[in-house]
Length: 301
Image (tube, rainbow, N blue to C red; front, side, top):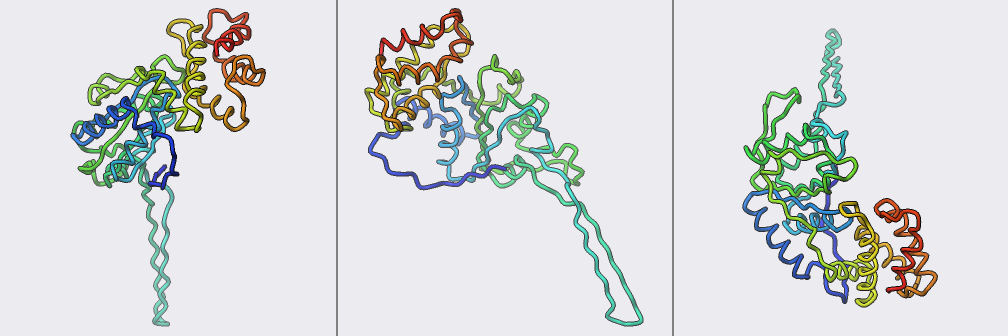
């Protein structure tokens, strides 16, 4: 189980990215809905900061945080728990020489699942990329959200369920349904959460994320964001574009290697090719000459 604790952040002269109006509004609304007892759902393209924001919001609630990563192999046993292994106790009583008494007791050990512990103790759960888990597994959350109980399916326990702690809350994150390895979410679960899309993040916000994460200057951050945007303009409509992670990679490498953000600079051009070539080849209608297209975009920087 992933348990997260609050750590002291390093001081920074740059404005915290979450002070941006877009994030301030999103965080305020997130706290409002969670406090009212509703789960929230951050959805949007990969690499745009959904998980980081979810963890930020979860930690700011001053409750223990449990991180669950969605995957197709996750089962009810992982979430609820199971009896695993045995505990063996043996008592050899020979206090009276004429009497030899032996008692032996073997019991199964109960290991709590991640959701079981969170529900019982009132944690804030971040269920990251929950659509990577099968809908059958995610059905367990319907009762948790609606009836405020966690059914103990197949747990071989006397209890049929446990009550959800009043301070329990949950934040879901997901990528678009067209991504590989993602299941289509059942309507019953989506109907029980408030979905907050990330598609509306503008270039100014993206630039501030780069500045906060890599300490790159405002002008350079804006140039990198514009460059990635121009590269994405070459992609087919509806295809997966180059994500914010690519911008972060470029900014990080540029800062650590003192590379000028200049489209005529060979090192910048090579970095742009290394970061964007493969992604653009997958999404572009002009697969035969991807390198020249990227270099042409570089000339606009």
